[in-house]
Length: 170
Image (cartoon, rainbow, N blue to C red; front, side, top):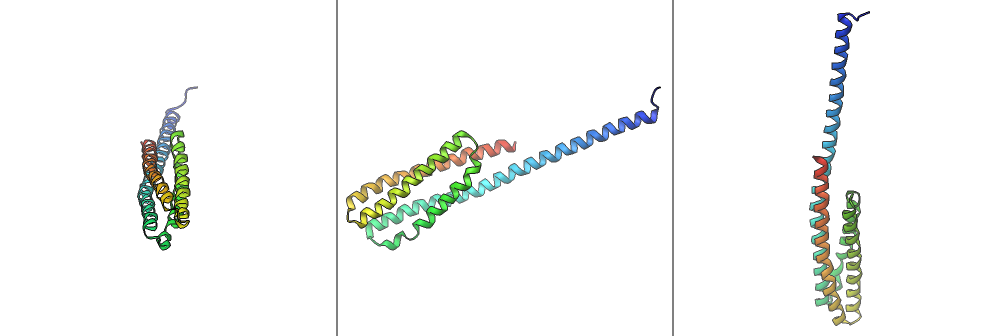
């Protein structure tokens, strides 16, 4: 028996409603993904500002150590340790964003260079306080190279992560 006109119209109507519901769901899902990517990009922009400030404090810390080498005034070193914790915290915040192998390698390199920098900085202070000024000055020059490496690799990491987030957004 052939379905009546009403039954066929109801079948067409049900199909149209199903397609509309599916397209609405798909649109909502796409908007949610776009919103998530936009939020990540916004958060990353905030992290770029934070990184700039954090990297600036590392450069300032290098200046504090230089001031200590020149003046011998230990008070100039008071701000160094809080900035180290701040940079370490930034590294931890960046870990979830480092998704690719290249980003993870770069983040690992930054951690190693930062550890080297802090060890050398502490050794510079120790040598200066021990009266070994020439050795302290030589080590300070090597430590200063770590700061340049930190600046370059941190910027490179952020550029890679920003590109990843932008690609996810599209």
